[in-house]
Image 1 (cartoon, rainbow, N blue to C red):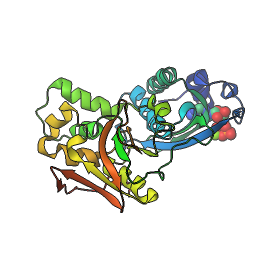
Image 2 (image 1 turned 135 degrees about the vertical axis):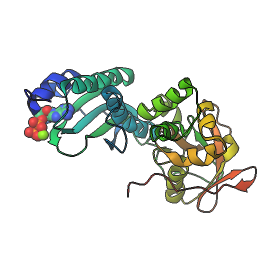
Image 3 (image 1 turned 45 degrees about the horizontal axis):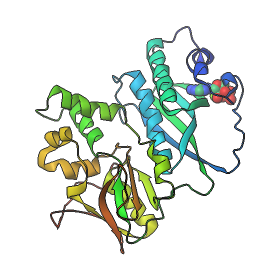
Image 4 (image 1 turned 180 degrees about the horizontal axis):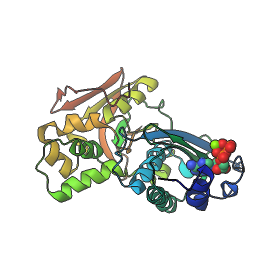
Length: 311
Ligand code: ADP
Ligand code: MG
């Protein structure tokens, strides 16, 4: 319990050491960012909640990294390089100093990994579940943010990594029966706990991708967002969707249909002209019409649900 520490003690002890330039050591009301000539500021926010996006028994460093990384994938999908973030915490009264130390350590690790810094936030106590809201800021050259609404008929559809691993990890936590090796099980759980957003891809997508989205609700659901705002139809070839060996071993014949609806991937799905060279996998194409369909061996695959929904 945080008996001896109030809100300001928490901020000074755990978060002030993470503050970047312009944050005034978290001792002012606000942070100050000089405008960057020739660049646009890209802003995104996401909240993770105990029992929904992570478990209370997950290591606090992993929870911190997940809270940050689910935002970095949004910036990457927009072609933006990450720079700063704000951190809003609703902390249960039962939170312990060790937990906070681990949490701050997770943030410190990712600040180093991604070259980002903390600008400020808000800290409150709650009787409800732990909730962490991050707002992330990134930069793109002026006018170069990649939107969802730019997909063109004739484009190919690409993804930056395997799909469904995090959903597999979650299924294991929910005690779904399996006969995986310990290594395969741990690999899937790691994907659930600490996403690997393709931050380095941001620059590669700029000027190349016509439309882009981060895969958080499920591949089919998120491609559906591109299809709907771009006014096109997207066809996904199930044979080409990259699935990891552990996930195939876990879900067997249902691997494809479950993976594309699982969500929590934090990879990028984007459309661009066909034949793009790079570490992307081409999984489909953009046509006239509306909606998204998934085929396997020429036949349409029926999907269990349209992606993760909170309500
Ligand atoms: P206010 O009185 O305006 O609510 P606070 O006392 O909440 O301000 O915050 C004081 C300073 O500490 C501000 O610079 C704020 O950005 C920072 N801060 C508060 N909570 C956090 C947090 N969880 N992470 C980072 N900075 C924080
Ligand atoms: Mg405050």
